[in-house]
Length: 171
Image (cartoon, rainbow, N blue to C red; front, side, top):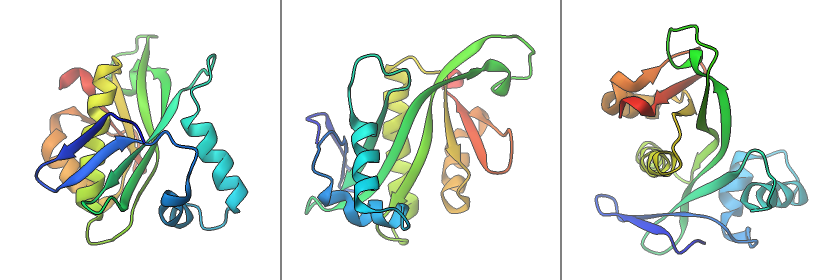
């Protein structure tokens, strides 16, 4: 786990970037997210996501949420990507925008799911802004989307019913 950890005082959750080769503490969440994958496939995927090899064109990472007992209660897997800017605005300019795409999002408890997802997203927004990203693309998860829409209504762009963007230029 990274030394860059952030404690969310409202919930008591510790949010950090996961950078370890030891995925065993994350296995309950990873097995839930990838139920049909073998252990080796999960290990290779995590290794690829957290690697810091030079020359990678699409860096990625894993944000994790831990409770006071340091049990992993949530994870968010993300990649950096570039898209055409017309997905974020109605202009037809052929420009590109850099951003972060949420690939996988999981929580250990359905009761905590909304809050864990929202806290992970808040931390991801900080990472995105620090890295000069223009957007975050997310899956449209009904329960959590309501919380996100409430706070970021003016920044949300809807290209389809399955995914949406938060335009960081408006934050």
